[in-house]
Amino acid sequence: MAIEQPVTRPANARFSSGPCAKPPTFDLAALATAPLGRSHRAAPGKAKLKEAIERTRAVLGVPDDYRIGIVPASDTGAYEMAMWTMLGERHVEMLAWESFGAGWVTDALKQLKIDATEKVAPYGEIVDLAGVNFDNDVCFTWNGTTSGVRVPATFEIPADRAGLTLCDATSAAFAMDLPWDRLDVTTFSWQKVLGGEAAHGMIILSPRAVERLENYTPPWPLPKIFRLTKGGKLIEGIFVGETINTPSMLCVEDYLKALDWAESVGGLKGLIARADANADAIARFVNAHDWIDFLAADPATRSNTSVCLKFTDDRITDGAAFAKAVAKRLGDENVALDIGAYRDAPPGLRIWCGGTVETSDVEAMLPWLAWAFEAELAAQA
Ligand SMILES: Cc1ncc(COP(=O)(O)O)c(C=O)c1O
Image 1 (cartoon, helix red, strand yellow):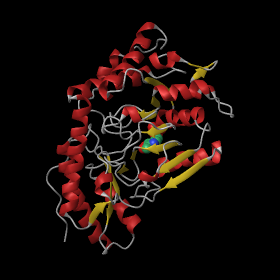
Image 2 (spheres, protein in one colour; image 1 turned 135 degrees about the horizontal axis):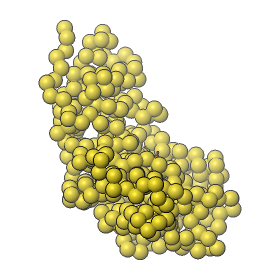
Image 3 (cartoon, helix red, strand yellow; image 1 turned 180 degrees about the horizontal axis):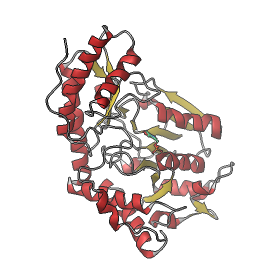
Image 4 (cartoon, helix red, strand yellow; image 1 turned 180 degrees about the vertical axis):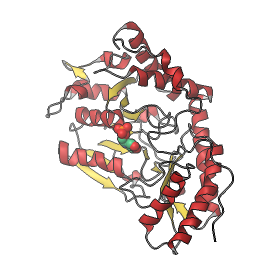
């Protein structure tokens, strides 16, 4: 018997976890205001870059004495720049609960070969945060994009820590409250929560991070794109828009438009509320169906951006093939694009719930998920 399809389709089927859906108001023609074909160091370009920095500060509530820079190579560039310039001064605790965090562990142990302890939780779980000693440097990912596990609200970094905290917040910034006074390095990419373009990263430094940069020289060589100091002093220009190398002014314009939209929905508070509403819609669906569950075991750690789900029905014979087939059906029907679990994660689905996604689209998509599940079960039988 054919399984009947739902009647309504989401207006926008883009639920990818990066690059994420553009803001609902996105209009390619609106980017015509970008200063293209000119030096990014000329006055108009520099002004745009500075505006991107200062409006990021305003929306995210970053303290005035923190530096914000636009750097090459997206979040990866920003985070590795921090690791390569600051680590090695003291013992490091490397915390990970999914594949990107695990990548930073590899960087520390196998590339930098520094004095480090690795604390890695399996997908769906989180490490013992109460056991972290913040007199060490601590590297971690606020929201594990590939596991849907984020630090719980009870997570507290001590104000009087001796070490630095290096936080990969790429799927958290603009969707979760970040305690700036407890974060020394925070990185993210434009391509995530605001639906901007890839290849540009942002790095936010506390005064303590700057102090480390100015007083510690790592024993390894640094390529030009990682260098944040010159002659033992911070290169202040980077933090007012004098980028290390050439940025795309088209991407900068796109980011500024995304910030316009972010402001129009109530800034950070509005963005968090939108992500929460999307994640709540999925939670209601999961609670109503006994064949699907969150990958994140503890509800307190469940992400409101990268929501990762697993199929739990024991009629499923090959979990990986089943999840892939469901994602393919949804993609083929153009109701949910790119929602298969990350390649290294357990089989399942990952549905992006950041603020650029409309709750009405999540709600319209979920009945299709039920349809695809039933249709695939029938096909398997
Ligand atoms: C937690 C996390 N860190 C790092 C990255 C890498 O980001 P990018 O490709 O923008 O450098 C991603 C991408 O999804 C991510 O989710």
